[in-house]
Structure formats: C-alpha cells, structure tokens
Image 1 (cartoon, rainbow, N blue to C red):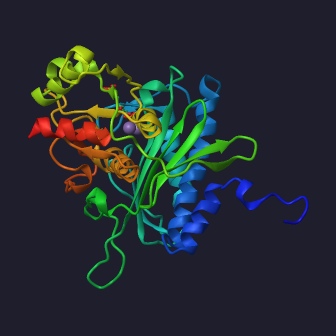
Image 2: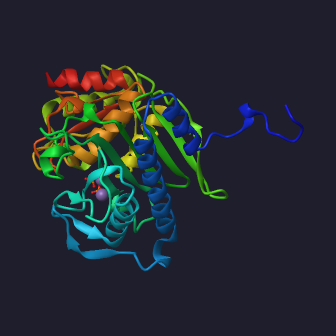
Image 3: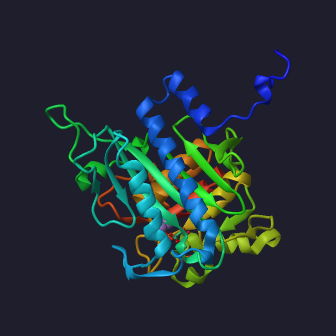
Length: 342
Ligand code: AHG
Ligand code: MN
Ligand code: MN
C-alpha cells in the first residue's frame, strides 16, 4: 500500500460507490442507479428543510386537504415539489405518482422519458413535523409496462397498478437525530447515514437482518375497541406478558411515523401493525407508496409483511391511493398474527 493512502477496507463506502458496484455486477442498470441517487439527493434537500423547523417559511398547515381528505402541511407540499423537480428531467422515468397528487404526474414534454415509474410518500408522519419528532420519505420503483408496439407506457394510473413483488427498488429516509436512507434493490436491505460534513450517505448498516423473534410491538392502541378479534387476541396475549400464554413480557412503541417505526424494526426487530378496524375498514396506510416499499425492504431483511391474510407484495392493487392493513416485522410474530386471522 502506498504511504499516505487509506487501506481500501478502511475506506467508507458511500451510496454512490455502493450503487456503482451493483451496476458493475449487473444488479442494476445506469438509469436505475441515477434514479436512486436522485431520490437520495432530494431526501438530503428535504432533510435540510426539516432541520430548519420553525425557522423556515415552510412551517405549519398548508390550509388544504389532499386526495385522502387529510390536512396537508406546507412541508408535505414542499417535499413533493423537491422530489418532482429532482426527478423530472433525468430521462429515466416514464411518470411519477405521489401521496399528495390525485393523478400520476407525467414527464414534461421537453424532457426525455425512460423505463421506470417512481412512487413516493414525500413526507411520512406529517403530524409529527410541528412537535419535532422524526418524519421521513418513502419511495418505490416499478418498471413501466411496454405497449403492444414496444413503446413505453403512457403514464396512466393502470401502469402503476402492479403488485409489490414487481418493485425493482424501494426504500425510505428518516429525518431523525440522524438522517438515514434505507434501500433495497432486491439483494438485501442496507442503511446509509448522512454525513453532514461531506453531505454524503455512508453505508453504516450493511445487510440488515431482522431477528425472527421479538418482545416489542408497535400499534396505535387508541383504536383497540375497533380492532378485529385476531388483532385483539394477539395484543391481549402480549399485554398478559409472563403470566399469559406467551410466557414473556412485551414492550410497546408507537412513533406515529411509519418510517421511524420501521427503521426501529430493521434495527432491533419488532412487530409493526396498522390493522383494519371498524373505522379504517381497509387499514390506514397506503399500499402503493407505504406498504409495498416497506414490505419489500422488510422481506429483504428477513422479516415478513402481510395484511393479516395475504403477503403484502402479492396483493393486486386496484387504485393508486388504496389503503391496506399492514402487519410487518419479525417473521415469527407476523406469522402468528397472520395465523390468528385464518
Ligand atoms: P402520512 O403522514 O404520510 O399521512 O402518514 C402517516 C401514517 C404513518 O406514518 C403512521 O404510522 C400513521 O399514519 C399514524 O397514524 P395515527 O395517527 O392513526 O397513529
Ligand atoms: Mn405516510
Ligand atoms: Mn405523507
């Protein structure tokens, strides 16, 4: 080794190096690499805005509702704009879709089009913005179906309605005490931490594995009276602790930002649930840009994700903004809840 040069093994792997390695081994192509890098760059910009908090203009409610009838925060809109502007012109996308836009967003005519579809929840956990708790961004990448004549699809809603197992990449950013970017391109789940000095994502959590067993659950217990019997039974048994049928004590967490709850599950295991209930009859979370990308990354880390009956990634979507029940995390626990549903 030449004097003064860092040993290769000591050098930190950046997201760019990680992706180029995968391009060289044929796991991803140059377009997909650029797409993921662009999403990550947009997440850095969103992270910077989130960190400014009440000092920035973009704080507080936007004074409107989105297609789901939820109050939109200014930061929801801003994050959506940042992701659109970053991704529109790269030539790798056929169209985009977002939680904050009713219809798919076509690529403006002045820009070239590509073979991928990008879906995102620009800001997840928006109820936590004003109270200084972690929020994030979730994204999913699909291939655009080819038309009968071999040309790329038109950006209609139907092009996006592919089951989650068709995703070619997915991930999320958490804007917490540190900003982390979790990613899968189908060969495991990997986590990167934003180094604020070099403003690069550095591989800090390679080959994440979720332990199959856990003693920690995450659910919004305020919905308890409306849950279905299998979920009631599972949580009752957890709460009974050592004295109950599980024979061990459980702990509980609920951040109310899926990104933070799922990152905790990736980090140390756990089960995360937003089941269907008498009020949210199809669950609360969105299939296309919350459940599918999270289901993909959790499975890639050795965990499982179902809607209580069916594997999330096998569900055939019927609408861009459809909701779905979500049970994900440590495999043995997800299987137990799923068994209680059968
Ligand atoms: P979003 O802010 O994108 O609408 O998503 C919020 C989601 C999810 O992050 C979280 O798990 C859940 O909503 C929290 O719901 P409750 O407020 O019902 O607990
Ligand atoms: Mn969300
Ligand atoms: Mn959102």
